[in-house]
Image (cartoon, rainbow, N blue to C red; front, top):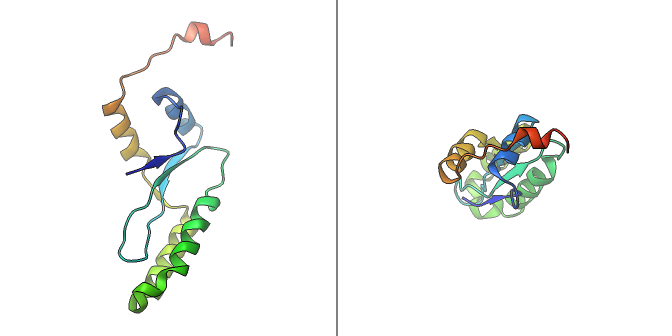
Length: 113
């Protein structure tokens, strides 16, 4: 899966942002089948609605392709808009910890910054 908004961040910085309230969310594409879209890293001060509204409008506009199930898919898309997407924080962190080595910074040097 493609993950956005983590460019230039180390695993240590991602963990710090998650402790402050950041999370990885995904909004499914409901146009044909329940296909997953890109996973977004939402920082603690960011609004989730800018990502959710984009996916809801895309699903609603292109929902005519799945005419018999359109009301179901549109309501499910609205549900994910309301709750803020599916939370994939633990899954992504587990994958990142397998890929990246452990980073232990020198906390003595960081105290004076």
